[in-house]
Length: 159
Image 1 (cartoon, helix red, strand yellow):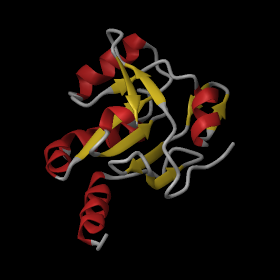
Image 2: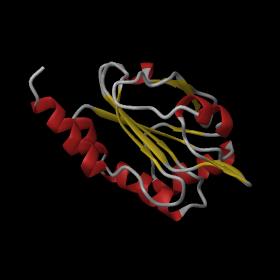
Image 3: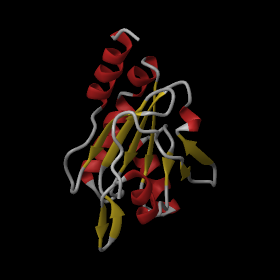
């Protein structure tokens, strides 16, 4: 299971959203910085808090050229309910194949029941990984303020 390091290309990852629409990252975010959040499921209060934080920061993130998407193993119905409950407006994928996602990204997988552990990636406008945050449990995750600060810092650096 390879971990993604800074400078690695983010692997093609297709998110199936409620209603059947798909989004393939990083291509769908080409030209923008991207944040991808793998969450444990709608039952996880830490994950829900993280998703809410990114939703609340949506305007500030967008103003800084940052787009967000999330993914879990939850089924379509649970994902629809979560989107409605939290008022999420960024793409949220459902029914992820945890083992396949892990094989391409290095995300940790809980063995029983099977779900993705919290994992977060920031990639640049060219689809290259800037930061990877891997957690083997409930805590340890990206927060919107740090992502915004990082992107601002990267914009201030000489090319």
